[in-house]
Amino acid sequence: MSDTLPMPVSTLSKAQRSSILNLVRRAARAEILPRFRNLESGEIDQKKSHQDLVTEADRAAERMIARGLLALFPNALIIGEENVADHPEVLDKVADAELAFTIDPVDGTWNYAHGLTTFGVIVSALRFGTPVFGLIYDPVMDDVVLGETGGPAELVMPKRRKRRTLSVSAGGPVEDLQGYLPLYMLPADKQAEMAALLPRFERVLSLRCSAHEMRMLAQGHVDFVLSAGLTPWDHAAGALLCQCAGGHVAMLDGSEYNAAKREGYLLCASDPATWGRIRDAFAFLLDLPDT
Image (cartoon, rainbow, N blue to C red):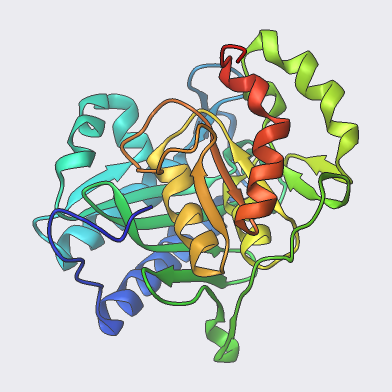
C-alpha cells in the first residue's frame, strides 16, 4: 500500500477512533453476544453454499454499526458485507471514495453459527481504496487490535485499561514458517498442488476467520496469511494492521494492495525477505509463463 494518494491522508482523530470502537463494542453486546449459541434455525441462512452462512446477528450488527458510522461521518461510503450481498454495485465506488468504511459484522460466521468462539468484528476506513485505519475486535474477550497509517498496531483491552504495541514475527526460511491459507477457497485445479506443498512449512492451517488469522499475524504468533476471494471487509483492516506491526503486504503478483481489488491473492508476511520466499513457493497460483 502506497503512502501516495490523490489527496493528503487525514487520519481520524483520537475521539473518532474511540467512538468507532465504542460503537463496535455496543453492537457486539446488543446484537452478537446475546445470540451466540442461542440462534434458532430460522436465524441462520445460506448465501452461496452451506459453507457460506449469514445469521440475524450479522444483519442486525451491521445495521447498527452502519447507522453509527453515518452519524459520525455523514458523507462516508459504507461497505457492509451483508448490504453488498443485496447491492453489489456498492463495490464499484470503493476506488473513488474519499472516505469509506468497511464492515464485517461477524467475521467467521460459520464458526459463530456452530458455537465456536473464533469470530470477530472487522471495521476499516479507506481513502480511495487504501486502508488508513483498521480494527479487529474480539467480542468474547472484549479486546481489539487496531492501528492507523503511520502508527503502530496495538492490542487494546478496554476493561483493563491496558494497551500493548504489537510486532510481527522475525520470519525466516520456509521450513520454519507458520501461517494460514484457505485451501478450499483456491481453484479446484490448484488445491492438490497446494496441499502437497504444505509439508514444506512448519505448520499451515485455516481458522475460517480472517479476523483472528490477521490478529495472530500482527501479534507475531504466525509468519504469514495468504488470502483468496478478496473482499474489502475481510482483508483491508488486516492488511493495514500487518503493516502497522512492521510486516510486508502485497498482492502475490507483487502489485500494491488496494481494497478495490476483487481478484488475485493477498500475501501478508513478517518482512520482505520472508514474503519473497513464500511468494516463490506459491508462484504456481499465478500461472505465469515459463521464462
